[in-house]
Image (cartoon, rainbow, N blue to C red; front, side, top):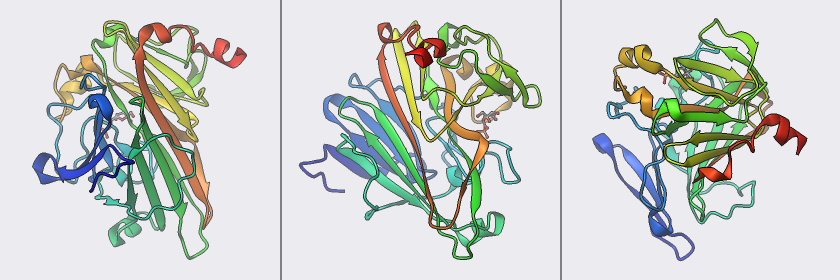
Length: 315
Ligand code: TA6
């Protein structure tokens, strides 16, 4: 795709196993890579060319397997919350480049972006009998922020509404999981996937990790921080239209059980997922839902303690 004076660089090229990917480049070496397979962001680099997302060395780039790492998109079903395959089918479908997207709903400072689109195939309609248009804009901001904006429209012609659950299943790259804290989820209710999705209330301090962790936090603030002390870096996750947040680390045993994940890789990743799980989203024909994720990586001094819900909600 030609580079215009208004866009730094958007390049369509071949990735692993010849799968099509789009590379977005901004000034000073920042970049993002997204595969048309699953509309899957697999790389986000800062202006030192450092990778900010985790991608397993054993990731499989071969349909129908989902790519292990980066940002898989879970739609129309999160995890096993329904009768479809785990995490739905959007992450293992081939998306197209949307050359004629409808006007973008939010004022964007980003000049470097790509629009992708997914519509159901005949086979998809057999397993999930709903017509939809799923438009995803992946944008790299002038400050190096990564923005993903999903627009899902119900295009059923039979008057039927449909409901779905959703997640941006983001794998953050961290230096050492035992040195990481998550702020912004303190005192919130969560469903524990390791205890039959039973509901509990989180304690008052930032979350730290010392064993397998798989929780769905409910009705969270729109801002969550992941502090990596060793790297002196904080990921700030902002979300819109996605009330919940899932936090996952498989730890050692699950890591060994996953063929597309290295035994020790759990030490260097953490999933914090902007999601809509507890209350499925329902759309009538013609209606459109928007779900937005904005990620930034900042020096740690910026954040610690600033995202305590009691403080955030009080401010
Ligand atoms: O988002 C957390 C989770 O639902 C975990 O329960 C775990 O299964 C993880 O997703 C990975 O799922 P996957 O289907 O990609 O192996």
